[in-house]
Image (cartoon, rainbow, N blue to C red):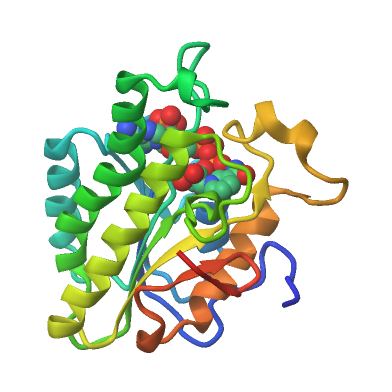
Length: 254
Ligand SMILES: NC(=O)c1ccc[n+]([C@@H]2O[C@H](COP(=O)([O-])OP(=O)(O)OC[C@H]3O[C@@H](n4cnc5c(N)ncnc54)[C@H](OP(=O)(O)O)[C@@H]3O)[C@@H](O)[C@H]2O)c1
């Protein structure tokens, strides 16, 4: 897959009109927002985040959301609903580390119940609740995409080196939730696509402490990852719903 410059449209097959990005303050979320702002077909762009994004494009409207607080998800969804159905929702929130006390576990002895609960709240339960309130906003009779940023380390079949218990397990749980969404939505939204995405190893706050392990040339700029993710989403069809894809458009096993 080739990636054009940041201002060229990425959604060539399926131009979208109404799009929401949840987690618009994150490294990848910001980059997604910037690309989407350059899509000529988009008329309504929602930027949802807990912390205000560093910059909100003129085309976008910012709404507050904390995905661990159901009331904020519900309020945002109710506000968006008044503007008509969404064509795409991208959930780019996630948690790997938070201060010295919440770091990915290297060994069994490092497991902490509160850290596991926090990882599950942000990486699995939060996106599930976003789905609960935002999936009903997808059109019933037109193509609609619900995509969550997952991680390849959440793949059970791909796990070779262990560690990172809470992050891996919470992303595996997210993948199961997305599969369930896909199955249930097939009954009412025949053209819906639900997917989990692996963005590559991307230069953001989330990956910063671990970047020394990344081979030369393998660390992606958020702009490059976001462009590739949008191009990947543009290629997906309803029969791809429930599956996981990486930034290069390759399906990978849960
Ligand atoms: N970077 C990578 O190499 C990499 C690799 C594989 C997968 N991923 C996945 O890609 C996604 C985006 O990661 P990133 O690299 O962009 O990380 P990031 O820069 O740390 O962004 C994380 C985002 O999640 C938001 N968030 C966390 N808890 C939240 C909550 N309770 N409510 C609302 N928002 C919350 C943050 O909001 P605040 O700004 O308010 O904190 C921020 O917008 C994550 O799911 C991550 O697991 C990343």
